[in-house]
Length: 160
Length: 269
Image 1 (tube, chains in turn yellow, red):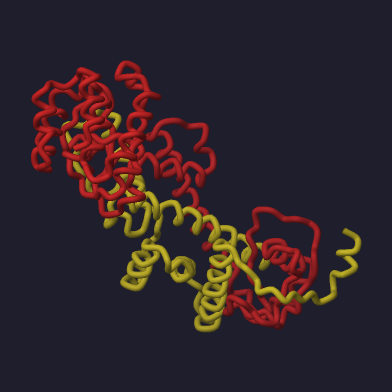
Image 2 (tube, chains in turn purple, red):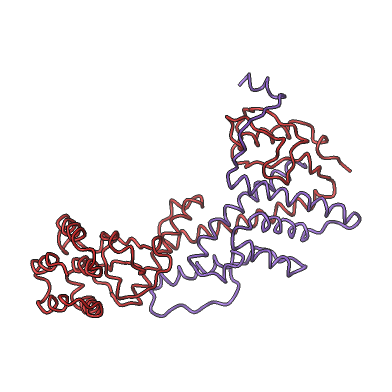
């Protein structure tokens, strides 16, 4: 430990290429998208107050750009680029049309179907996927959201 | 057709001699007909034993080896009595067969003989005792099994899912978690929008933000910050000590960022 603190200011080099885990790759991409975007926002709009929605827009855009290997990011990008006023990704719990349950299912299964549909609404583009795909995509969407929140937290903390 | 398989069938005395006659012929059409016959009538009582044989007979080419394995397997397993509802072995071969067509005819095969049936395009599902074996419900069941398998993967990702059992509870947890994450993002971006006017980021000097879940306090080295470019995935100037992982390294960078005065990196307007 002590030796490490002594070496704190030394440059350390390694011959091996750095291997990044997917979460690190994502975090890296995310910050590299978000930070310049924020800077640009900052510089472009000097007089008016920076709109909260535009920041959210940039935040979501950075998320979509950093996770392009996933299907949901494509839907998110479309949603963001199509609307000037960005729609928030948070959906209220009682939105949308309810698809009638199948008559041959038990009540429990119907409940599950309903919940799956709700989950679909949360995921960008979830409604266009079938349920099995959606479940896979939800997994990596959650992971990316977690990384996004931690990246945002660190950016916010660094600036306060 | 391999005779030993048929003899086994006879021993089980669960099949009528007519069946043997039908099976004696080589036509696959007949086989399919037989299977549907079996499926509708005998299957419930035999509950899986025929399924083993029916799957075996779907590939008459490979005979000797599989016959032995089937026989061995059948010896290991007691006959239909213990195959109660508890025995829910449903290994759906979705992984092997990506283009699986849900043909109900083939859905009676044994999961144990999966090695034999790998060439098939079908999803193999074993019907539970007393459940319907028609195509639609089998397909439904296969679909539901897929979904529950994926939900188990989700259980690992979403914290707090382990305590809840049942699909509905888990789905509730997942929904709540996703919603809370999205709300967090919104809240943080709101905060950022308030802070943003006061800041100017130095892109070159801002290194990657690490994964903040764990903060090991030890630092294994420092980097020349100006060399780090956030746009490159492998920045040439930034080399990492071979023994440390990137996580630790980046946290070290993060810690350095915090310990240095903020004004070094962020000039205030």
